[in-house]
Image 1 (tube, rainbow, N blue to C red):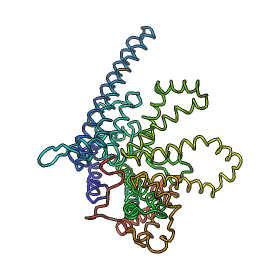
Image 2: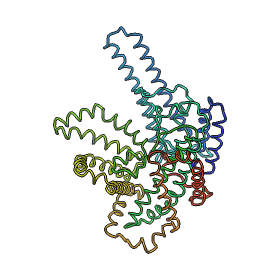
Image 3: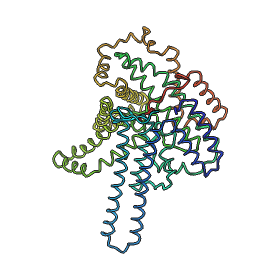
Image 4: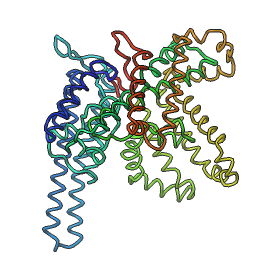
Length: 523
């Protein structure tokens, strides 16, 4: 079920009404039933994979939880034993738990790898005549997001950073809560788990603020992102270079931002309407003054997941510790401190790139981001000297603006590897900016041959200005909360949003908007 569809809006209306009409102790049951209905639209195979992930993670967490409780009971009952014996028993129990969590994580990781990559060579499909085997790439909605949620939860239970949810139905709701199945965020049980199961009284503020955020998400998606999409597609399809490469960097940045943040706004808005606060996934990323800051603000839950469950565990492995010790002894303290961090960073970014897809363009995209981050890290002493020597210049608005624009352009250049899907071609088009720029195309009407009219460009430009203005006005506190405090202005703003979506929104066949970039079948 596509978020940007009439069916979803009808589903949301019915679910919200049922959620607040049933007894509060049964609200989580409504959420679970709604999640089942929502995901049922994805098909039998998608439902089977989601159920398998839920079962595997539930069994692993339940077994680990029982072993942890048994260990705690044994330690309490045998306090008189020598410290070494108690420690040995605890370590033995923890090693057993490690085996269980490794099996659980391994099974889910293999299922994810198969669904995303291997099935295109050895897959299957379910048709009217039964199951057919062949090179069928599986179409499974949101598999990365709920698999990452389940893996993170298993690891947190193993680390004793999250409680074990013994109720299977409640565990299923945590893993499969329907809004975040499409494009995240990747939540942790410690942050949101219990919110699903506690009573939520009806509050007008939650309903209004959530509805405004949903409408804002539709605005960014339909009025801005989908409207600029034809120009992005035309530049790529026609393999235009020169100034069009620069336009592609700009247009695609606008499209992916409007599409992804718009989808996340819908997700978080739906949850807010139900009294549930999911973790934020974006924090004004285009205001970032550096690449490191940008990645702390963009797709934040994904970055946190890779940091917590790949970067940190890898950096403390025995192999990394041995490498650090060896490099300090043979290469010097300076290199010895950096080498393990570099390797861990490279591996983490490589996995991030491969998560987007098994293709060279994603690998290059990841390695370029990694390179920029590591170089910036090495140059930090120079940056510090500059800030110390020229504090007024560094703090000035023109220089801060320059840094933000510089970061935006750099990220846009790296992100364009998503578009051409061909590394040599991307580099060729980049160099064409200097060899055959063709600046006249901006003024001879060729710009309007990309499938976007002058009026549409004007609407998109106005939409971008509105997005910028809302971002600035909501810097200290969400704008929707400020609007709630001024009902007449808030209602006017909501009506204006709906009007803009209806009049200026870009719709596909049958008035069904195009799918979200990060909300397609493969996630």
